[in-house]
Length: 141
Image 1 (tube, helix red, strand yellow):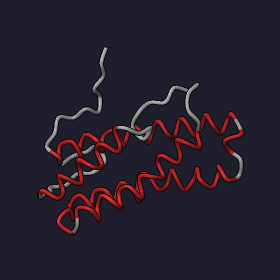
Image 2 (tube, one colour):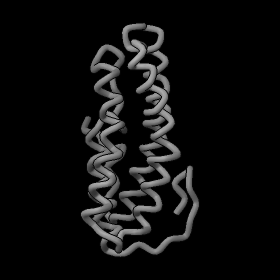
Image 3 (spheres, one colour):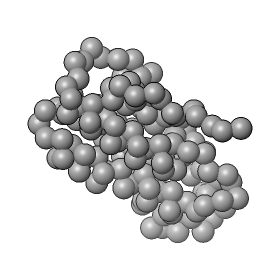
Image 4 (cartoon, rainbow, N blue to C red):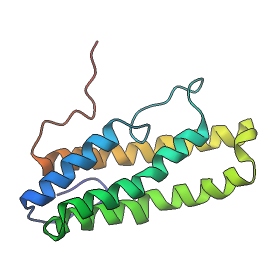
């Protein structure tokens, strides 16, 4: 596996594939991977969606049990090393009123777009693990 941010040789079991599918769907249907037009949405709701991934990931891992350990290794790295720095920083700033400042909102959105790019690579990896067609870039024109 080479997700652009993680290189590893891992063998995935059925529980890993089921967990990857669950997480794949959660990520693809959230602002965590979907572009948010500057005039749409709000920063606090977007931040909450990223934060919700912690609970969702825990539930997916618990639901699929110890046989999804290889998925868990990947998911925990994503949570702790990719998502947590963003949510920790912006949670503190939001409590201090950052989302009332247009300059801070713009900075949040720029950093969110960077994180979305990384998480889109993660969704490609999850589709591969789940053994499904990747819909990360799927659009109807």
